[in-house]
Length: 134
Image 1: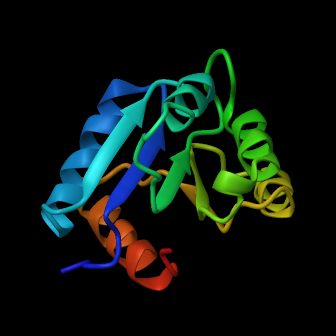
Image 2 (image 1 turned 60 degrees about the horizontal axis):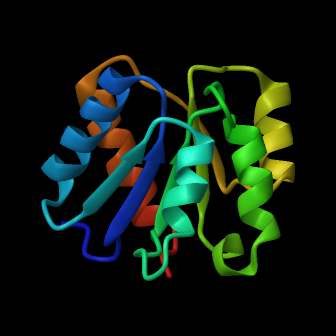
């Protein structure tokens, strides 16, 4: 049981990916609150709502409309309120250049989305237990 993580935010424009992600989180710990949005712009809007819960971890897809994962990551790291939240890039990209750039911009990890549900559950379990959550 993952007792550290309380609120997780995922920004992804693929509803099927979000659904699988939320189900995997709930399987790991049904006390985790998962907020989901369709792009980086919506993520920033949600985070900037007065009294909005501050997520313990943020997952960003790289390729999204309006504001992509890279743009969102840059904006998050520029705001003191969000700069300390671990951000994980969660994408279909397997490019080393993307991985290196996102880490340089402040992402704590760069994960290529697994295609199998069981692999996703295992991946999230390892990630959430290894990342220090504030």
